[in-house]
Length: 373
Image 1 (cartoon, rainbow, N blue to C red):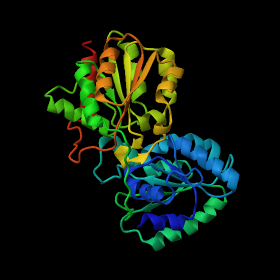
Image 2 (cartoon, rainbow, N blue to C red; image 1 turned 30 degrees about the vertical axis):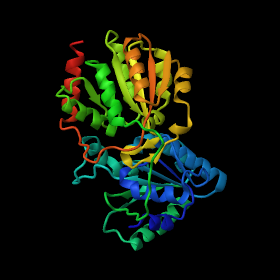
Image 3 (cartoon, rainbow, N blue to C red; image 1 turned 45 degrees about the horizontal axis):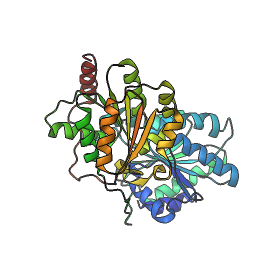
Image 4 (tube, one colour; image 1 turned 90 degrees about the vertical axis):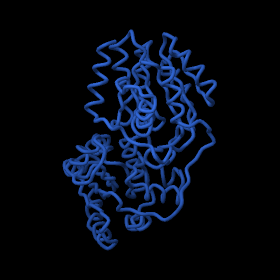
């Protein structure tokens, strides 16, 4: 069905969410209709954040909000759904739109397989009535489902539309870009040149895919890298755990702006522990690029000042390769917790592949390498 038709059927004028490739049609429609307008559309830091925003909207207006997300975000909404929205607590109605990655029987990446198996069950366990929209679902069927949902919402309960792969379409054109000139894959290439044989923990999405292909291109082993293919926002915490337990080794974290925002509290924990062997590189293109390019708020905040306020000993921002190379070399030699923000363009090559090793192979190879350090 068309994304604008789903919007019409639901009938809400407030959407908040975290972008998802399965919901790209809806995301593009919302950007073209509202842009980033706090009155109608907010791209939030994480799905729990979205749920709380939605609750605030309902408290202020009495209207029903919509929260959109990939099914990987269900874990982030469990607490606010159970202890805030639930009809045994504040009875705040909300419509969730959930992109169904890893649907059983549909090929997908390993990080989505188990999440896909439990997607509908988790909604049921949270008391959220759901309706699945697939390619063959008609507008009339969705309208009928929404009519049934209205009674549920009026009783202070929540509902969800679960979106199968390819179920939503949008014919409008949406272009996401910024004024930065550095390309992420080239940035990662520069990082690997300086890091040498140091362990790297890389974030979810295209950054890890590019790191894998750079190792292939250089005929290097993949044992140096832990590719965080899922768990968006947690790569820096993984890197912290490694750094604290391998104090004689330089540990690098290649992070993204969307991931950094999703669990920014980790920066405070990193800064408080001050591992002198950790280099935190944040590649900031101000976008959720892996799932379509929708903007984050990272282009409007001062990442360097935030890092310093959290206790990072050294933090700097780079906008060209000359300054990046200089800062990477200094960070490798500096015995102090460091953050390097790298301003990056939006975009990746069309033929970018995916890791050819399994997640379990990646873990075992990385652990075996760490044991030699």
